[in-house]
Image 1 (cartoon, helix red, strand yellow):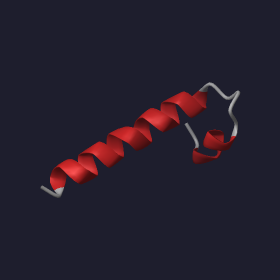
Image 2 (cartoon, rainbow, N blue to C red):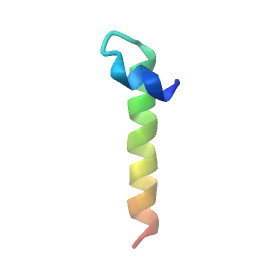
Image 3 (cartoon, rainbow, N blue to C red):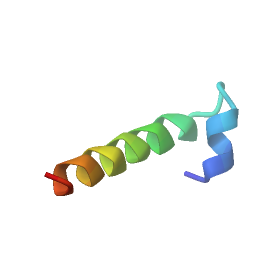
Length: 33
């Protein structure tokens, strides 16, 4: 899912992109411990 899809609320790929961002944030903070 392209990053630009996050700007489109009706885009189905925005859900996948949002999940990817949440996963990356989780891994980022988890590795900082």
